[in-house]
Amino acid sequence: MFEIFPAFSSLFETYIATVVFVFGAIIGSFLNVVIYRFHTGKSINGHSHCLSCLKPLLWYELFPLFSYLFLKGRCRTCLSYIPPRYFVVEFLTAVSFIAVYSLADSIGELILLGVLVTLLIVTTVYDIYHYVIPNEFVLAIGVVALTWHGLGLYNGLPFLSLVVPLLAAIGAFGFFAGLWLVSKGRWIGFGDAKLALPLAFMASFPASFSMVILSFWVGAVVSLLFLLSQKICERGKVSLRFFGSSITMKSEVPFAPFLIVGFVLSTFFGVEVLSLVSYVF
Image (cartoon, rainbow, N blue to C red; front, side, top):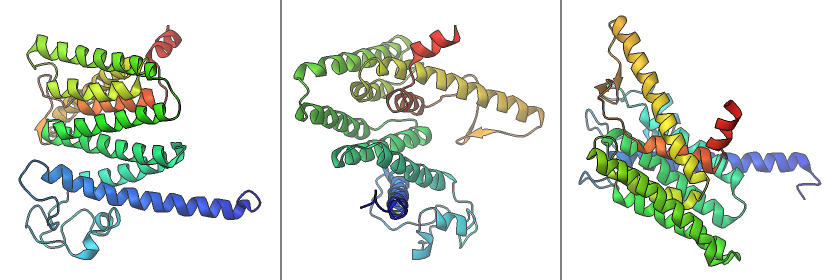
């Protein structure tokens, strides 16, 4: 029917995309609660409140994205600034859900990829703010990866098709675990090694190889940009702070965001390091 009436098809697709975007923003709002309260002893089901004056939020302050814009990023009661992270996470999750909707070929893939991007976002932001990767997040990503390959087996792939992903996972974990062991945790955390295990298992080879290399490239570029910005701000006598602390060569930088970016680039965007190198040289 939609092929016969393309205008209706376009309208229908716009409606579905809007629903997916709004649903993603709602999930992003929940992720903000998880990021703030997980492993703090606070209930995730508790009523939302201002972090400064602890005033409970009213219903019209709980709309994802719109409430932040309506309140101009400030608490209605005490006028303290609301961290922009809340808006960024909601918007990023909403956009990611649109991408998942456009990529998925079946309901199973849609659900799995939706859960995956949710876990990747919450892991990224949690590591940025808390400098730790909870085992629960890694385990959940591992379940998604196992289910993903399980769908492949269900659709007719042989069990031997799991050999390469398993080797990729072992190789990525062994590489990061080796860095952690040699540096005694100064270069990289053991949580990053654990996170690389399910990500590499899902990416398989050669995407897992590109994931590892890209994570270091992205990390180097981002760190250099922050250091450069720090120098510029120092000359202008302005303090640049990265999640609450000044940037120096000895600053601790969370690595999970870079690893996840490398995973997304290599797995979903098909970025291949060897092809990039051969193209440059």
